[in-house]
Image 1 (cartoon, rainbow, N blue to C red):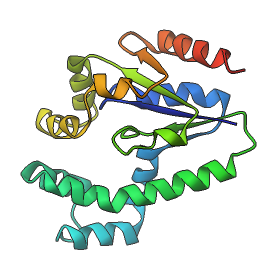
Image 2: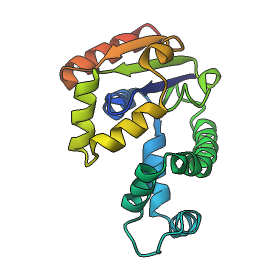
Image 3: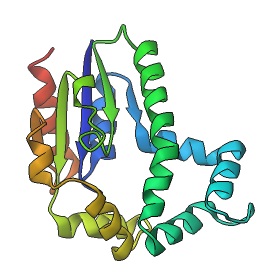
Image 4: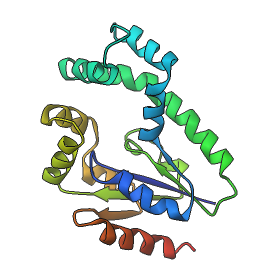
Amino acid sequence: MKKIGITGSLASGKTTASKILSSKGPFFSADAFVKKLYAKVSFRNLLSKKFRLKKNVNLKHSIRKKISENKLNLKKLEKIIHPLVRSEMKRFQKKNRKNKFIFFEIPLLIESKLMKNFDIIIFIKARKSLRIRRFINKGGNKKLFSIFDKKQLSENKKIKFCDYVVVNEKNKKILKKKLLYILKSYE
Protein backbone atom coordinates (compact mmCIF):
# COMPACT_ATOMS: atom_id res chain seq x y z
CA MET A 1 0.00 0.00 0.00
CA LYS A 2 1.26 3.45 -0.99
CA LYS A 3 -0.07 6.32 1.09
CA ILE A 4 -0.16 9.42 -1.08
CA GLY A 5 -0.68 12.84 0.44
CA ILE A 6 -2.05 15.65 -1.70
CA THR A 7 -1.49 19.15 -0.46
CA GLY A 8 -1.09 22.67 -1.78
CA SER A 9 -1.95 26.23 -1.05
CA LEU A 10 -5.48 27.51 -0.57
CA ALA A 11 -7.66 27.07 -3.71
CA SER A 12 -4.85 25.50 -5.73
CA GLY A 13 -6.97 22.56 -6.93
CA LYS A 14 -6.28 19.87 -4.33
CA THR A 15 -9.85 18.57 -4.39
CA THR A 16 -9.89 18.38 -8.18
CA ALA A 17 -6.58 16.49 -8.12
CA SER A 18 -7.89 14.12 -5.45
CA LYS A 19 -11.03 13.37 -7.44
CA ILE A 20 -8.90 12.54 -10.46
CA LEU A 21 -6.68 10.22 -8.42
CA SER A 22 -9.66 8.52 -6.75
CA SER A 23 -9.99 6.41 -9.92
CA LYS A 24 -6.80 4.66 -8.71
CA GLY A 25 -7.88 4.07 -5.12
CA PRO A 26 -9.90 5.41 -2.20
CA PHE A 27 -9.26 8.95 -1.03
CA PHE A 28 -9.77 10.79 2.22
CA SER A 29 -10.54 14.49 2.11
CA ALA A 30 -9.92 16.47 5.29
CA ASP A 31 -12.21 19.21 3.96
CA ALA A 32 -15.03 16.76 3.19
CA PHE A 33 -14.69 15.24 6.65
CA VAL A 34 -14.90 18.69 8.26
CA LYS A 35 -18.01 19.40 6.18
CA LYS A 36 -19.58 16.23 7.63
CA LEU A 37 -18.63 17.39 11.12
CA TYR A 38 -20.56 20.63 10.57
CA ALA A 39 -23.63 18.56 9.72
CA LYS A 40 -23.60 16.90 13.15
CA VAL A 41 -25.73 18.55 15.81
CA SER A 42 -23.28 17.67 18.60
CA PHE A 43 -20.40 19.33 16.72
CA ARG A 44 -22.49 22.40 15.91
CA ASN A 45 -23.48 22.68 19.57
CA LEU A 46 -19.83 22.41 20.63
CA LEU A 47 -18.79 25.20 18.25
CA SER A 48 -21.73 27.36 19.27
CA LYS A 49 -20.66 27.00 22.89
CA LYS A 50 -16.92 27.55 22.27
CA PHE A 51 -17.52 30.64 20.12
CA ARG A 52 -20.51 31.89 22.11
CA LEU A 53 -22.91 31.83 19.19
CA LYS A 54 -26.65 31.41 19.08
CA LYS A 55 -27.58 27.87 18.11
CA ASN A 56 -29.79 28.74 15.14
CA VAL A 57 -27.36 31.01 13.29
CA ASN A 58 -25.52 30.21 10.06
CA LEU A 59 -22.63 28.61 11.93
CA LYS A 60 -19.99 28.65 9.19
CA HIS A 61 -20.74 32.27 8.34
CA SER A 62 -20.62 33.28 12.01
CA ILE A 63 -17.31 31.49 12.60
CA ARG A 64 -15.79 33.04 9.47
CA LYS A 65 -16.85 36.42 10.82
CA LYS A 66 -15.24 35.62 14.19
CA ILE A 67 -12.02 34.62 12.41
CA SER A 68 -12.07 37.83 10.36
CA GLU A 69 -12.47 39.83 13.59
CA ASN A 70 -9.76 37.97 15.51
CA LYS A 71 -7.19 35.60 13.95
CA LEU A 72 -6.81 33.75 17.28
CA ASN A 73 -10.25 32.27 16.64
CA LEU A 74 -8.73 30.26 13.80
CA LYS A 75 -6.34 28.58 16.28
CA LYS A 76 -9.27 27.91 18.59
CA LEU A 77 -11.17 26.25 15.74
CA GLU A 78 -8.14 24.20 14.67
CA LYS A 79 -7.66 22.85 18.21
CA ILE A 80 -11.15 21.40 17.96
CA ILE A 81 -11.05 20.12 14.38
CA HIS A 82 -7.49 18.83 13.83
CA PRO A 83 -7.58 15.97 16.39
CA LEU A 84 -10.87 14.76 14.91
CA VAL A 85 -9.41 14.81 11.39
CA ARG A 86 -6.31 12.87 12.46
CA SER A 87 -8.42 10.24 14.16
CA GLU A 88 -10.55 9.81 11.04
CA MET A 89 -7.40 9.59 8.85
CA LYS A 90 -6.18 6.65 10.95
CA ARG A 91 -9.54 4.92 10.69
CA PHE A 92 -9.58 5.43 6.90
CA GLN A 93 -6.05 4.06 6.53
CA LYS A 94 -6.84 0.97 8.57
CA LYS A 95 -10.04 0.33 6.61
CA ASN A 96 -8.26 0.63 3.23
CA ARG A 97 -4.91 -1.01 4.03
CA LYS A 98 -5.33 -3.71 1.36
CA ASN A 99 -5.50 -1.20 -1.52
CA LYS A 100 -2.50 -0.53 -3.74
CA PHE A 101 -2.90 3.25 -3.37
CA ILE A 102 -4.78 5.32 -0.83
CA PHE A 103 -4.98 9.08 -1.16
CA PHE A 104 -5.24 11.78 1.46
CA GLU A 105 -6.16 15.35 0.57
CA ILE A 106 -4.76 17.36 3.49
CA PRO A 107 -4.57 21.15 3.01
CA LEU A 108 -2.29 21.68 6.03
CA LEU A 109 -0.25 18.49 5.64
CA ILE A 110 3.11 20.26 5.96
CA GLU A 111 1.99 22.81 8.57
CA SER A 112 0.64 19.95 10.69
CA LYS A 113 3.92 18.04 10.31
CA LEU A 114 2.22 14.95 8.89
CA MET A 115 4.88 14.22 6.26
CA LYS A 116 6.11 10.99 7.89
CA ASN A 117 2.62 9.50 7.46
CA PHE A 118 2.95 9.37 3.66
CA ASP A 119 5.06 7.48 1.13
CA ILE A 120 4.56 10.13 -1.55
CA ILE A 121 3.52 13.77 -1.23
CA ILE A 122 2.18 15.69 -4.22
CA PHE A 123 2.01 19.48 -4.04
CA ILE A 124 -0.65 21.16 -6.21
CA LYS A 125 0.48 24.64 -7.22
CA ALA A 126 -1.27 27.62 -8.82
CA ARG A 127 -0.46 31.33 -9.00
CA LYS A 128 -1.98 33.48 -6.26
CA SER A 129 -4.24 35.57 -8.51
CA LEU A 130 -5.89 32.40 -9.82
CA ARG A 131 -6.26 30.97 -6.31
CA ILE A 132 -7.95 34.17 -5.09
CA ARG A 133 -10.38 34.04 -8.02
CA ARG A 134 -11.19 30.37 -7.29
CA PHE A 135 -11.70 31.13 -3.58
CA ILE A 136 -14.08 34.01 -4.32
CA ASN A 137 -16.00 31.87 -6.84
CA LYS A 138 -16.62 29.37 -4.01
CA GLY A 139 -18.19 32.06 -1.82
CA GLY A 140 -15.14 33.45 -0.04
CA ASN A 141 -13.75 36.96 0.00
CA LYS A 142 -10.30 38.52 -0.27
CA LYS A 143 -9.97 39.28 3.45
CA LEU A 144 -10.73 35.71 4.46
CA PHE A 145 -8.43 34.40 1.73
CA SER A 146 -5.65 36.56 3.14
CA ILE A 147 -6.18 35.26 6.70
CA PHE A 148 -6.23 31.62 5.62
CA ASP A 149 -3.37 32.04 3.16
CA LYS A 150 -1.13 33.68 5.76
CA LYS A 151 -1.80 30.75 8.10
CA GLN A 152 -0.10 28.47 5.60
CA LEU A 153 3.63 28.20 5.02
CA SER A 154 4.92 29.71 1.79
CA GLU A 155 4.82 27.46 -1.26
CA ASN A 156 8.64 27.40 -1.42
CA LYS A 157 8.86 26.07 2.15
CA LYS A 158 6.18 23.44 1.57
CA ILE A 159 7.61 22.24 -1.72
CA LYS A 160 10.84 21.21 0.04
CA PHE A 161 8.88 18.45 1.80
CA CYS A 162 7.09 17.20 -1.33
CA ASP A 163 8.09 14.54 -3.82
CA TYR A 164 6.25 16.10 -6.77
CA VAL A 165 4.97 19.55 -7.72
CA VAL A 166 2.06 19.70 -10.15
CA VAL A 167 1.14 23.09 -11.59
CA ASN A 168 -2.64 23.43 -11.93
CA GLU A 169 -3.28 26.53 -13.99
CA LYS A 170 -4.76 25.11 -17.19
CA ASN A 171 -7.60 22.59 -17.37
CA LYS A 172 -8.59 19.29 -15.78
CA LYS A 173 -7.41 17.25 -18.75
CA ILE A 174 -3.84 18.53 -18.37
CA LEU A 175 -3.97 18.10 -14.58
CA LYS A 176 -5.15 14.49 -15.00
CA LYS A 177 -2.34 13.71 -17.45
CA LYS A 178 0.29 15.07 -15.02
CA LEU A 179 -1.11 13.18 -12.02
CA LEU A 180 -1.52 9.84 -13.77
CA TYR A 181 2.02 10.13 -15.14
CA ILE A 182 3.30 10.31 -11.55
CA LEU A 183 1.34 7.21 -10.52
CA LYS A 184 2.58 5.17 -13.49
CA SER A 185 6.05 4.93 -11.97
CA TYR A 186 4.56 3.21 -8.87
CA GLU A 187 2.30 0.70 -10.65
